[in-house]
Image 1 (cartoon, rainbow, N blue to C red):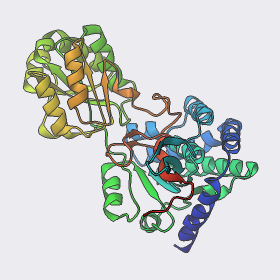
Image 2: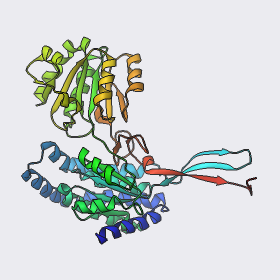
Image 3: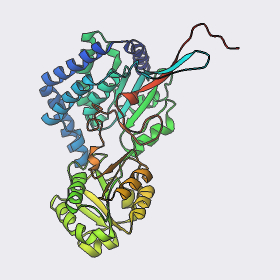
Length: 415
């Protein structure tokens, strides 16, 4: 494992240089990366096709295959993401507050990079680009450790990104790729707090739990997305149908897809037959509570475990609730603090939902599928934090910085 430790040491050295590189040079690197990804798209897709073929042979789920697959459209999204991050203001060096003390000292806070960010992720090769773009722009070196199923895709993309750094004068070690699928390498790195400043794991609950339990490096967790949409009694019917359908069907294998639909009892008889018909036409399996089954029938019984489950598939749990209080209580018990939504025309209920629901993102009259760094105008995201320290929700450039105090004096000494 000596080469793994050396990789981390070189990343630390690179981070000190990168922290002082100008916005112009960082933006030049990002735009060059976009250009080279476009020029090498056939090569990237060819490697990705091998990963996808092997994943299918291993009988991995359709949702996993979807996250793994790089289409022309998704590669175009990677290119646009790089350009978007290049166009955003550089947070490094920003003075976010200044004040003067009675003794004349001027005290302020300045944004600074975190240092070395290690991201451990599964299945999605586009994360290689998103993580690199955000870390580079925010002055952080990044260590990329993707899942074994996407190894070929990640390796070819990481090499392109490293070559672009070198071409513009940024240390190539600013973008490090762990060239092994050995879990032992991860176990070594997550304890190497001399060189790695923060770990961001993106993947299954078991993987994230293991890293949080064993790491000596601080961890910002991208937790599971057991997301709910609550259809209030005052919801507009067509809006409710559109939002619920989109939240489940548009891309079911991602963390911001709806997993449980909550429906107020006064809206259920009007709403449920229509949405269940729409969802069944889209091949969604419905698992409902007793009240739901009385209204629509021909669906599976929902069990207690269904309310906790992040399906990441065309499966949906449905529950009829007596009130907004019941909906909020259900979310508090079973939710994962990721994304929650209410559909209502009641201002009072919308404000209650916003105040009382504990989640990283809470929507009024919009699909949960918008919880995304790009959709929020962050350019991209390195993860969606479901904890409260040091960041929460989609993590963009600002979330990849810390602050330090800066003090200006005129010879003051403390009495």
